[in-house]
Image (tube, rainbow, N blue to C red; front, side):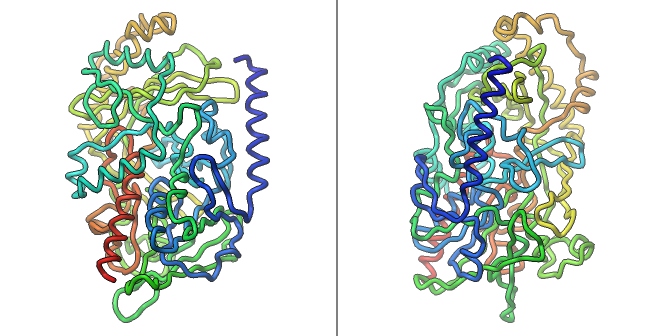
Length: 529
């Protein structure tokens, strides 16, 4: 595409997006993707002071399927700090893949940038649908070993995956570049070829996508349309300051949340409360689904966390819980730009993956925009099970500010050694006959690095696949039912509970987790009635 045409393309998309964002305030919203008449509003007065059976903080990858499931029997309020994805072509249209990561602002952009203390740039979702609205849309289930190690019910897990897939997932049509990458992986010995499968299997495979055959993205927000629409309220552009607790003589019990407009003053806050349902003798919960950065941050702002952290910012203490913010982990990655220079190509999210070295190395490729009229072709790989871990700490008492997080990429020698192997594999794929022929032999004669040189490349060029997790891990912060230790009526259901990233990409499993835990909570409430 010529630069002039590209600028017109971006301009028209941005105008459409601005028209959309200015029109959504307090109104119901509908969407062809399945969200038909869920009540969505950005007016805090619509919900302030009201009571619900469940309050889900974060309308993201796990929060949306969780809320849809709970709404079958109970009233649910979803509080999302960002706006709606509907009507926004930069999010929904595959031809604009990657652009939301370039369109950033302080309070309202769909992607919120942060840089870890390691110095690696990263992003987090800030939109209804969460990261499913800004990612590459790659859908792959977790391995059987992961499910077994998590202690999940295998039949219920399968049912939850199937429920998600029936609403969101398609078999992709491969672009010419994805065919080239597939051949390059096979030439590099990433075998066998498994064809199309949603399962996490060794070798080269084509996986599912949340883009449909028309190139339209289907986010986690679409799953809200599968709930009882009369029982769901979505509050957009509102940020939760803290969970509210009451003391009945035993453990502190969550009774609601305090929140503010995402672009408003911290001095102007509202509250919303839990109520006892007429369908059950037990209380519902506040459920944090704010992600691996948001959920531990909210816990600490609510007075639950390490003693030093709470005292440092004078946060009133509800419960000391040393594991909050610990076990933070991101999958270190190396990316090779295999085109010789930027030019314009159609953005192309990943569709093919290579899984090798006993599932420890995962390779994918994409064409991503770096500006309004330029793209680059990247072949990248990540370490699936790094040993290095880090931590998250509060930066301030403002919930809109990113917390301070350090992942300690490649801090362990075993990670660095495996990164060397990963780097050599990337070079093999990048210099394969298929890739070099497609790109005009640009890399055919590239210099081969030795192990020591590859170690230095890893150290200097470590990047992210955006699959970070931890901070509220099972067994440390929450129990097997995802209830927070030391208090009542509070759960965490999202990627912060994971000790490792599941499968090729965590999206599928986090979508499943929301559905899975929703079904389990419904059963629990039925049994207690």
